[in-house]
Length: 69
Image 1 (cartoon, rainbow, N blue to C red):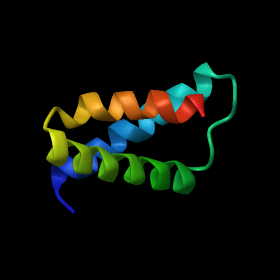
Image 2 (tube, one colour):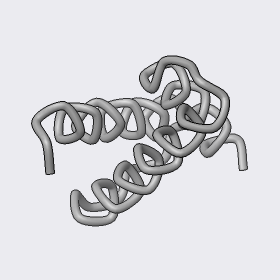
Image 3 (cartoon, rainbow, N blue to C red):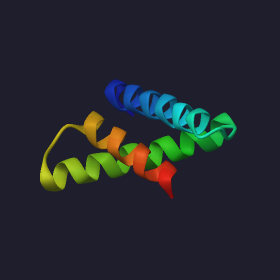
Image 4 (cartoon, one colour):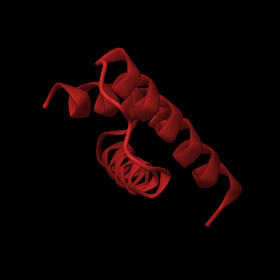
């Protein structure tokens, strides 16, 4: 896995942890959080390939949407 993708996963993990904290719920353990982050990054890359756009912006959007569900 590339350096940039690892950085995106770490950023997604921080965003997810922040969203959990903001919603007053404890974040899951690191393995579960990383699994969620990897899924979000993969989906963000798929969306960016289909319609173009910035992966980080798509990630932020997806994290916000994921926490609303």
